[in-house]
Image (cartoon, rainbow, N blue to C red):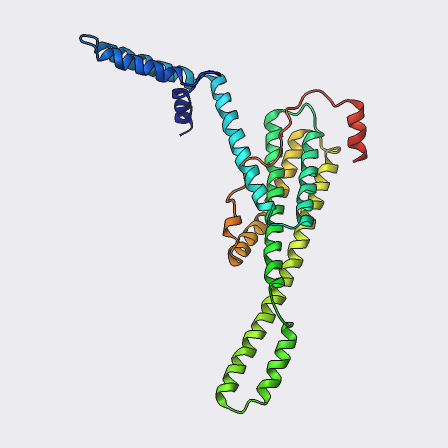
Length: 290
């Protein structure tokens, strides 16, 4: 399907400032002229010109780069909007944590210079994977906290004690069964709450681990022999999060957060620098102080 998207783009391509694609104008002209008596052969000529035009433009490297750039910008815009929609579900502190990690990941990319574009893209995708897992952990944490904080009334331990006292004084079998069932439910809730707190501790540990991994990568830029070795380091870190990603998916499904799942890692989460000359001294000093 890759080539046919270039063909489709070529079919509707129009120079800046034109409201209608020149190709459509040409097709309409040949179609109308071919309707005239004795000029049906223009349809054959028009078909040949159309095929030649589409093949020429669709195989043009510069045109392909333009289409790829446009699609990348659309994907980036959609992804960033998705991220914004997810961030509004978090509290101010969680949003600040995400933005801080995002800034650190972006800093890793921006502090590198004269790195090939392909290598920079690879690093951006690897760091984006870390950032995406971090966001999903924050969303899962928020969902668990909403469930725990949504428990109304007295604490479960107090309720268990009260129902246990009522059960001791229950005079009829029906009341004993009702209170017994209620007691079992409360005990199950207590067990679930304990599991939820354990999950929160695990999430916090994973959040901290990702933060430390990003800092380790950033500090390791100085020691890296080249951009390729840094990219491999980022990929290695990302691969260690496979089990965490699967756990997150299970928890989000459990807590009814399926609408939070974006599926695979979004195509663009970070700005990819274009490389170029080293930064000016003032910018270098700022980076060193950071």
